[in-house]
Image (cartoon, rainbow over all chains, first blue to last red; front, top):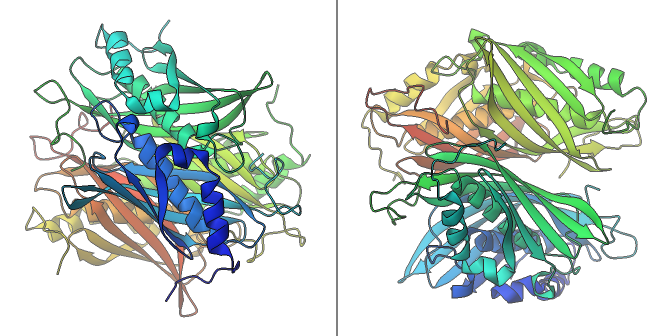
Length: 158
Length: 158
Length: 158
Length: 158
């Protein structure tokens, strides 16, 4: 049974559409692997173009994926017509991002009308072993503009 | 006058080499714009491939650049032969990453033998106006292995 | 010249009153040392009752003071009738909190209608030398209820 | 079965002793409610002296307790003779700290020779209902001095 009840019956379609509009996710080769109300898994394969100086995936790339996982997880619980933006997050890097495939698992900790708090974990699969490599806690904001979308004015905290 | 005295007289070459070994930085189009002991500016041009659903640069990409700025700033103060890795950072996103060009300015707050704390700010230049769009505080760790480089064992906190 | 223009002409009185209503600040012996629009210094003397196992001030106490400095700094820029609450903060601890007197200096980085981002630094004065011992970045939320005060419902992100 | 195997067979006594040496914990009325390798619950009763302006427990006090829970949890997995200090933490505040009794539950996410990452959650019990009010992710550092204790020099990141 799902922990959360989505307000938007079309949450799956809306979240997937929003994800697909993110050119950055295509550039990084990140895709949705699982999507439930308040819970998302993203997946990414190893690629040379995303590495740091030791040949592991760059911590910033891992963080971009974790941030996006949090965003989509939060977004599944927002009402129809809402936009979303990240207001803050913190990442702890626990182990080098070495592996062939990476999973980014985000869960909503506390949904809110304005602010939603999420947690996410990144795992690396290397030679058949999965290792926790990073954690994130982050906060997302719903943009509830009357025009049914995100406006400049809505971008907080401006 | 520089705030910090580098331990490694070749800090500039070593930091630049390390940066250039990061394939992820090339993929994201990020380059070093300024390099001083304990202080680094990175620069990035707008590119469609790095956007989120509203056409602004993805927060994760902004964060990857901020993280790298912190890493290079910390690295300029480390001794010869040291490796470096990020252990944690936190980002506050203040405004949408809208603009033609972005600057990521990192400063060492407290250098340490093992741990170095940095702060960084991201600015977007849009129509000739520069806006603060994000802040980061982060912690980097020096890897002081006898073999003169980063070893697996060295990756903390494993 | 002040960096920020307060919306509430009585910002000083309101901020001071709110601070004085915080029993926790009295218990910890923390007081306002300086108050400007968007900028606050709090001060605290060393007391045995606030120490950790090595006889330094407990990191949690340092953080409580930093959080409060951020809150008051943000509050000076909020409109009349607003309430305030902290939604998140991150602290980096740079050195042991050893000293006779401590200063907590907070500055607003980005004021917003809903969310305000602040940064703060803690300094320890020991034998006449002042040392930076901790940094904070945090986010505060304005509670703009019609009843002119904080209500339960207003507590985000619930 | 315990998730973690303590290196120090006397972990319980050492952790409890260290906790009891923290005068700040006595001042705040915080005690150990449960102690396992890598897992700790602290408890605190409501007290007027610890409140903010709305009569709830001050966020800084909640954070001090969360930080201490992380510290003790990490400490249970460190070798004999080690000292410990917090290097950083981030707190998300989810709901007002309203209640008669508070619990702070910390778990080690990744133990390390030098750095240990923990997560903690704060719960308020109010009229028989327990609510999640705050989360923390934090990093602790082991001080492995040859003299069997924490020395000034050991205080990182100096």
